[in-house]
Length: 265
Image 1 (cartoon, helix red, strand yellow):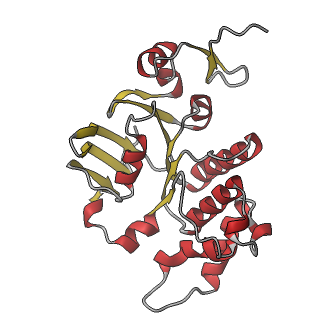
Image 2 (cartoon, rainbow, N blue to C red; image 1 turned 180 degrees about the horizontal axis):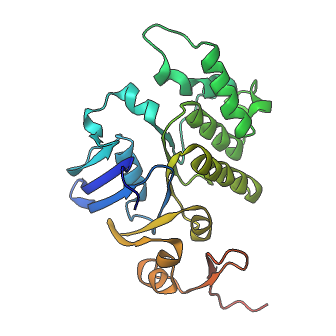
Image 3 (cartoon, one colour; image 1 turned 90 degrees about the vertical axis):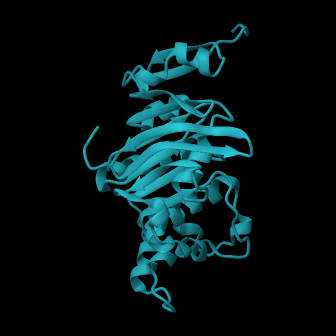
């Protein structure tokens, strides 16, 4: 693990009523690293993202951003550093796509100051890299699920964050746009030092695009490490209760998960 992490999670616990959802979770994220969070439904993945973005406060433990407890960081300052792409965001249907993406510049605006040329330029850059510029004048309510997901990513990138939190980023996307989105995020991580925490249901995609994975089970980290260390047949059987084959990808050797079925060819 590299020194000077951008994110440190220390013994975080969280419960809904009396149900423990996160139980003593600890990990670090280096600058420019992409960390994938995997695990079955109900294992605490989305709750973790909400705590990292300060939508929820841990019952115990703390989250440090650049060495500072996020509970002491002002909302605008936090939004200039951390951007979130939620799984099912609420979007105002009557806004144009450009207006929505430009909202990502709000944390950078001073008191009673409107958007300037630099803000418009940042929004256009985010739309160019997410392939949403051509729909700039369309109303959000007219967009498909996949188009909306790309627009939400563009809004997040317009914030020019150092840390990007993705809750199932490929939801609603066809395979071509899944690859485009994950290639884009990987390029920003490698080229601009963007740090990423991303929730995945597809373990094969997680293995292809993440530097490191943590697998959650009942609110705890079951396993942490490289994709090859985390995505194993034994882990899938114990955590997911699923019988699968895990094979090395023929081009890069990274683990690929194949379901075991009784269906014959």
